[in-house]
Amino acid sequence: MRIIYKLILIVCIVTNTIYSQNSIDEDDYSHFSQKEWNDLVNYLNAEITAIAIANHVNNNESISFGEKEDYQVFLESLEKNEQDNPKSFVEITKQLKDNWGVTFKNISQPIDSLKRYEPRIIDSLFSKIENIKSYKTLKLGESKDYAELKSFYIPISKSKDLLKKEIKQETSQPVVVRESNFQGKKNNSLYKYLIIPALLFLITTIVFFIKWKKLNKNYNDLKIRLENGYKKRENSIQSLTNNIGSLKSENTNLKNDLKQIKQEKAFKKHEEEKMIIKEETKSPAIELVAEPVIKEPKVLYAGKPTVDNKFSSVTTTQVSGTYSYPFS
Image 1 (spheres, rainbow, N blue to C red):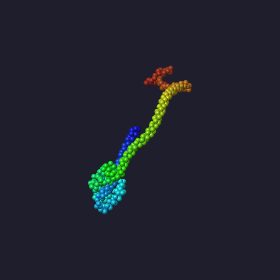
Image 2: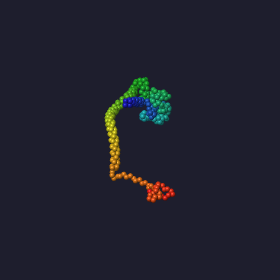
Image 3: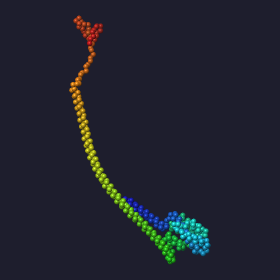
Image 4: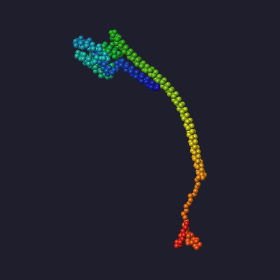
């Protein structure tokens, strides 16, 4: 729980730091998406082109009617030029290519090519603009309008000499105020985004405290249930043990009773058989009579009788050559 809490806190702080840094960078106009970068380049292109033309008009008296007319139309169109809705390069081309072709070629086209420049950082953008060949020729660095335009995006880039000069001319106050406001905005933004981690920490602490209380309550309830469950289980085990013991004892008694019943039944059956045999032997209705043995008759042979009618001899076999009387 503590590890998760620390991880969430670290993630909140790191995320907020990155977000606040990105926000400060966005306030400082230092990083842009491709669309924002294109809009910024278009906006600066129109403004810087107008400054270059103004310097040329102020330093040259021989300006044709067509040049003045196109310049006035171009200035009027700049009233609607905003960073969120800038004047496109196509519109600049249509208005300046005929009468201001040289300025368009030397200033507008090189600045428009910076849309493809990487990295998309505004310091580098102004550095590239100031490296254009016509920048020094047209004396853009000496222009108050260019200095104010640059100081709006990069306040610390304004030179001390220019600030002193503006103070003397009593025109520097708006710029100084804008710069101060810009720095104050940065500090306020930083302070604002430093408060967010503290608020997230407080909210996370409250949420985790509530969750910890709930978990602690659930843990205590679960602990009590487990203890009651263990007690019931122990009682159930003891009861089952006692029941098993009584069942074993009852089973032993039943086995002994069954054995005794079998013995008594066998003894009783034996006695009944003995009684039946005894009764059968004593019964007068039943007499034991020996089966008669049938013998074959024995044949004897007697010789010729004497005068006094007696057989002279008796033999078991007949004598050959004599007449004998058989009898059985």
